[in-house]
Length: 236
View (cartoon, rainbow, N blue to C red):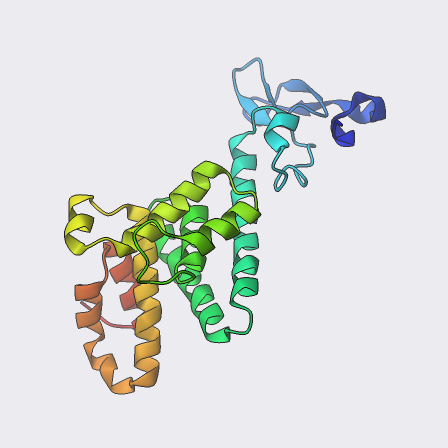
């Protein structure tokens, strides 16, 4: 069965329209199911009237709409990130401490990655899913994280990336050094450590005097260290 929104028998006179090219201003004709069109100037742009609402979460969107534009791929991942956050809360049930830690960890990761580069959606998903499985589990053994992402119909490539970010925390220091720990893993690992430091300083206010030592010795990335110093108001 074809999606009613893409079936031409349900179309009316508004199914064909014109839109100005955002680069040169020339008029470009669109059909309502066109995801993108190329202007005579060579610029390709997204259909300004297309409703990507269902496509942002539908697992069959690519078959329905053809090749998805980068803007929609980003939107799909962004919506999926929010659904992962909800799924983690459901998974942890009444464990409000771990739920709060997951939210703080994701917030710290978002601040760190905005200062650098990386896949924001994958990093935030990994931050939410970071502590769901047994920390003593073997590297790559991530049943809870994989189950949640699979239930949400996340693309296989994204599941693999998120789980790879998480799995690296179980590697030995030597292995991590040899593998040149991925930038996304460094972001989430630093966010997790900053969350631990917040809890440590809350429980033992006197340990705040050693915050710079913790930052320098335990955080992986310069962006993470800079953010932690800003958060805890310290100077190197």
